[in-house]
Structures are given as structure tokens and as C-alpha cells.
Length: 174
Length: 174
Image (tube, rainbow over all chains, first blue to last red):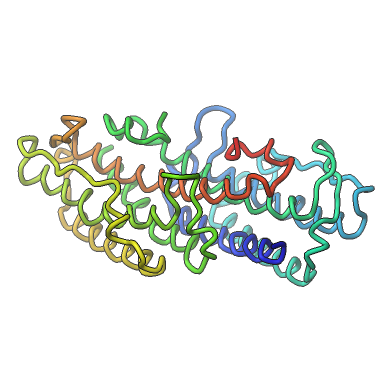
């Protein structure tokens, strides 16, 4: 079960950069800069957030669990870092950087050759407390999907007025 | 504004097949067959639905508006057709068919060389009543995004238990 879980998660983690690339590369800025209102993120902001996760969140936490166990707290993740780090970069550069960092991280993850029992190893999240390596890898995977969801939602809502009476049939517009 | 609208919509409509292909091609069936429960759709079902839309919904309605105007009702769209038409086909075949039909439809749409004034032409939806060509094209676009959203939501929710305490941070799990 755990071996299957790892391959399933990797199947998604591997595909996310290409999925976002297909959606966003070359897309007019009206789409990539669109938000759901003040304080919400655009597809561009999401890409910066995903890059920051590759740099500071997922694999570093995997390594903390493997090297230190639950005695060492994870570094808190800065959910707003992209507003400093990515500002002004073209989105094409962000798509490339995300793809490269993700590929590097998945090579590193595969090299660890995690065995089912290791997935039950514990770490300590600064706010959530005890978590397993299994839960961390599942969250990395679900987090990708949640942000593809967010990108498509932000873009769809841009057409809330444009669709006229069809809004009734599109639950995303509600 | 309307000329810009058409190019913006085409930018999304053109990208959708590649986005879904990147997410779903070669993905383990545990993901592509996952649903949100009885009566809800899997990513596989969504692909069949999108193909049916290419065959019977979007471009046929564009042509009804251009050729007949509001006097001719659109054919009602069968939202369940994929359960007859696609059943048993491998998802790779559905991804290919969707990409081909979409490409053909967008060639046809571009060939029409729609002018801004034409986007205000009226059609009659069997349930919603009067709609414009502009609204129809906007809905085609938003409908793509709504189904990318659905695919990512269905997949993410498959890991609701797997993510453990992180579910609290993932609004898709609520």
C-alpha cells in the first residue's frame, strides 16, 4: 500500500510542471495577472509560491524527518515569500524555474529509495505537531492539485460577467 | 474590447487539451477513475463530457446563431452522453480525440473571422433564453476551466485522509 502510494504521488508530482506550463505559457497577462480581488493570488503569484515550496518546504522537510526525526521542528513556511522573490520576473522564467526545481527534487526523492516503513517516520510541524513522512508527501501532492484548482478558478471567475445567464450552470461562478 | 475578448478566449481554448493531457496521460487509473462519490464524475468521465461538447454543443451553437439567429433554439446538451459514448475506451484515446476535435473546432472558429459586432448576435438557449455569441464563447472558455478545476479537485480529495492534519490548511479538503 505504501509503495503504491509513493508511486501514485510521484505520478502527480511529476506532471504538475507540464500541466501549469500548458495552461500558462504564452497566455495573455490579463489571465496570468488576474486575481479574485484584493489580497488574493493570481496564477503568476501561484507560480512564485510553488517555486518557494520547492526551495524551502517539501524536500527540506523530508530530509529533516529522515535525518533528525520529530525532535527537530520544520522551518515555518513563508506563504508570502513569492511577493519578494519573484516580483518582476516574467512568468516564463517562473515556469522554467519551477520545472527545474521540481525535477531536481524528484530525482533527490527517488534517490532516497524510501521503503514503506520509512513513510511512517515522524516529523514535527511548528503548528500542526506530529506528522508522518507519508502525510508530508501526500500534502505535497494535494497541494499541487489545490493550486491547479486555484489557477483554473481564478481564471474562470474572470468571465463571471461575460458568460451572462450561463453563470447559473457554472458552480465556479457562485 | 470584443476583438481582445475573442483572442483571450482562444488563448485558453487552445491550451486546454494540452493541460489535461499533461495532467492525465499515463496517470495511474486510481487517479483517473476517482470520483467524489456516487453520481459524481471522474477525470475519465470529464474527458468524455468535453468530447461530447466539442461534437454537439459549442460550435454547433455558434453556427445556429450565425445561420439562424434567435428563432432557432439550440439543441439541448446531453450532460450524461459520455456514459454511453466513451465507456470502455482508454483515456489516452479520449485525450487524443478531445485534442483533435478541439483543434478542428478552433480552425473552424478562426475561419469564421468573427467581427466585434457579430459577437452581439443572439441565440436562444432552450432553458436560459436569449444569449449572445459573446456569452456562448465566454461559456465555452469558462467551462474548460471549470472542468480543469473539477479534475484537480476530484484528485486532491482522494488524499483527504492521506494528508492527515494538513487537511486544515487545504480548503479543497473541506
